[in-house]
Every structure is written in structure tokens, then in C-alpha cells.
Image (cartoon, rainbow, N blue to C red):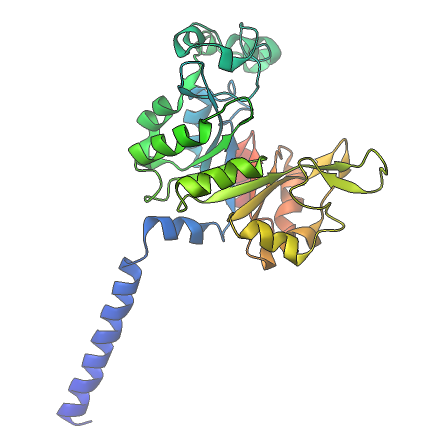
Length: 311
């Protein structure tokens, strides 16, 4: 090879290397987050809520320590407009309070004990450190884990929490969680997701669905809010409609002991560009079965079990 040919070859090789490096460098954190959704995701349901009180700092700390891909939390609003992580619309099940959470100010909610119930319900897992656990604000969660975690947040009962979408987007922007690829927003309420999409169309959205037997014909499955037809009737066009605003779907696997989706549903969704995340799977045999089906992610109260299974 002549010197000029060798120079040309080396130059082309260097150019190709620089081009590849540049292309790699140009992948934004948000783009990387979307790429990562093509691989399996461990979603810690209300934190490691099989080991500590749900949505508590203790549960989130464990899930983060074990390496869950996402910390999943339900977001609601207090009467004075603060965003808090709490699942139920009412306080009785997981606190010593009563009534609707959005009827209370943040200061009033902070006086509640959201940990002792766990010790009573699960004496084998009881820990004195759980006593007096406070309801967390979203800001407290972000201040603790920052950019070191990814967050899977649900706009919970938006009809009871008017304005939650705008408040949530404002808080995500303030903490720079969007461009850095740190957050997914999920909801059963399609309107809530569309509102978020209008406020900031860069936020990746997950459409939640819940399938169960029709009251008119229990052999026919329907979806809770009507956002899609039942799994037996859903078409490519139905999935494409969801894909116009969402990057994935979250669905139940079982209703009252009966399976409501199958491997074909998962494959069809994924062929239409929608990764499928299944909630809430806690037994290893079911985890393995869904992994074999090629599911894109699982919500679980036991992220340690799922991580061990996927290692």
C-alpha cells in the first residue's frame, strides 16, 4: 500500500471513529432512557414495600440499595397544594388518620404515623424504626435520591386531585428530571396523561390499563376506563392510538385468580412500539413465567427477588 493510500485509510478510520464517538456522545439522557426501556426494567412498587411500609423512605432506600431500575410512587395533592407520595385516596389503611388525604394540609399529614400499621400487619418484619414514618413529599424523595435514581410516578385519582398534572410537571422541571431521563409518568386516566403531554411533550408516559370480566358477559374482558378494548379484541390500531402519546403500557396479569393477558398480547403491544410492564408480581414462579413471555418490566413489592432472578 502506498503512503497516500495508507494515509487515506487511516484518515477514513479516524473519521469513522470520530463520527461514531460523536454519534454516541450525542445520545441525550432522555434518549438513553427510552432506549433502556427496550431492556427489562425492575420497578420497585411503592419502594421495596414487601419489606418496609409502602412509599416510606425505608422502602425506597432498600429498593435503591438493591438496584431497582425505577422507584414507583403514587402522587397526590394536599389541600394546600403540596405533592405527596401516597397510594390510597383515604388514610385509614396505612396510617392512624382518617378521611381523604387531599382534605388535609401537608403539616397535618406530617403528624400522622404511616409505619406502625406495617408492624401490626407483618409482625415477622416489624421494626421499631418504622414507627412514626411520615408521609413523604415528592420534593423530599428528589432531595434524597436526586439524579441517582429513576422515578415511575402515577397521577393518582386526578379527579380528586385537580391541578396535579401542572404541579407535577413544574416540580419535575424544577428538579431537572425530564431532560436527564429520570422519570416516567403513568396513569389510568388517559386525560391526565394527555394533559401532561400538552404541558411538556418530552415527558415519557405510560398508559395503565386494568382488564376484568364484563358484567354483561363474564367471558368477555373489558378495560376499566375504556381506553382500549379487551385483550381478546385489541387491534394494532388500538395499540397505535396509545403509542401516539405513550411510550409503554402497564397492565394487570391476573384478575381474581384468572389470567387476563397472554404472551400474544405482550408481543402485539411490543410490535407496535409499546413495552409492557406488568403489575404487581411478587411470586418468583410468576416472575419467571412473564420473563419467559418477553415482558419488558415488572412492578414488584420484592425487587430483591426479581433482581436475583434476572442476574
